[in-house]
Length: 262
Image (cartoon, rainbow, N blue to C red; front, side, top):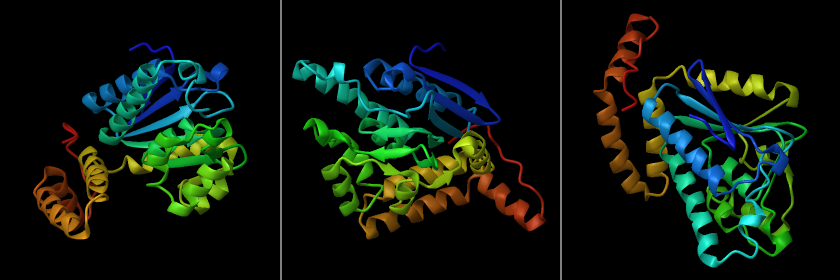
């Protein structure tokens, strides 16, 4: 499938989606977001990869939304843009693959949102920066707040909003937005190696882990336990859990049934 704003390839059970508008600092717009949606949905349907890395061409990871699609536009068009953004975030959430944001440069406003909405984040130690910079333009980062406030403590999220500052990879790691910080020149290599480590599990296990996590996180404790016990029962009779337990007892490597994600 051909794309104008992104690149996509698959190797060794890992999908690599690259934001490819470096001349625009990889700014997001409706067309780019629709391509990301289509790419993730296609990868989900085919089920050939277990992990998807979202990275970017050029020096900037993503500068947020293209201002030209907001400035002087009627409210209906702006709403349509952010409804597309909502659809993209929900597609990421529902994808059966684990999605890793590989941040090599600045991720600001909608770019910070995109990274925060991924399941995991790796970042280059010197060049990666994160921020919700909307207040610089008197334009609050309302949609980024949704993902960021669910990834970091509330007071830190509020600080990010109110100061519009950029935070280093190490600072973002310190308040739990970033999972792993790698040397800039090894970011590609080490993120791919981490993706391969995750991909040792079966497709089914990765899918279940992701869906159960996001399903229970908004529940009360009682609701979460009621839901979780049912998921434990379902997983316990699955083909791959049976194989995993059997392989452990027999002291051998498991052979996963990868015929279906579900």
